[in-house]
Length: 291
Image (cartoon, rainbow, N blue to C red; front, top):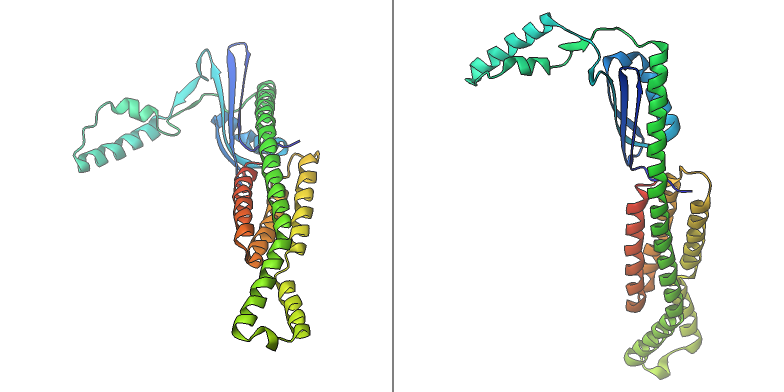
């Protein structure tokens, strides 16, 4: 199972004249971050709300809105006239200083924070239970979206890893030819500058072995193969929260690809290395969205 960190969940419930609407938008993020917009009535339950979401969603950047309405409007309210007067004086003073028209001041005042507040101080236990149940429904809806997008991510990541593997096999095919070309080039340079009859065959063979060992990429290709196999194993793991682990493995894959490219000293192999790097970058972009 693979889950994305992006998705959207919504749920709505009603009891009598009261309705509850919960909307959750989730984006990728390194940690668990919540931008919570709730009624003042829910402030005493903010810790419970955040805890429930973290247990379910684990990671991501969330925009959460929980609205409680009655008869199609917000709950019975009171107007904080003292605060409204303070706002009015401050706004009027600023408007005069800037020589701006004051317009419909009452409409502006009604939208300012804490001017209009619920008339009741707290929810009843039954009302909070309704809010909690609605929140759980929205979380379930979001989780379904995350799973659907996670399946698409999994398919794409498998394709990227398969492509890297195919390109690495091309590198393995070219590797013996590369060594032969290096040997021929070195022998040709020595014959040209020193003279073939002046070359010590045994010494040349030793130097060639030493030089080719420094350029050998067989270990890098073997480690790359192991990393690709491990990546696939993680994809099959039942734990849905594995984005960080997949990211770490991609870093190791990148190291082996880069080392292969730097040691190859061959234009043909470099072309396949470039293609592997391209697939790797695409995989890294996708893993950023994995839970």
